[in-house]
Length: 149
View (tube, rainbow, N blue to C red):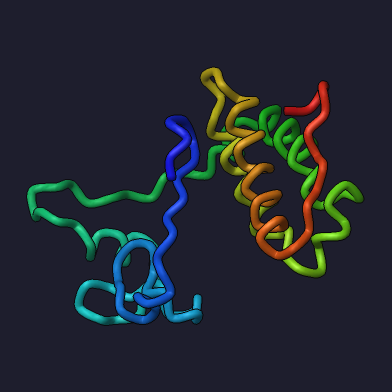
């Protein structure tokens, strides 16, 4: 499902568990082996993993993008402040079910990188991703307000 903006969700029927591979992992319930290359090697390097799944050798290799928060300290401070809703009391009932850490980190990085307009959309999409994970874990959070997203 694609919202025609910033979010894409892929759902696979349980009958395919352990029978798929690629950039979305292998759907075996073990996230530690999701970075398995096309040649069945488990790697830690995201670029090596991603580049192994290129469809055509004529496609350029992906390169590491520098930390968008490092080059814009003002933006970093704004992003951390806004994304702190994820680690706040607002989502407290979800914290024991879904670790907020990776979602907060992704929110900050995405919000720093989205600095040419649409910054609130990037922020709200990142927070909504955590809210969705919470909802799937059985905790519905009312986080949107007239002043926030």
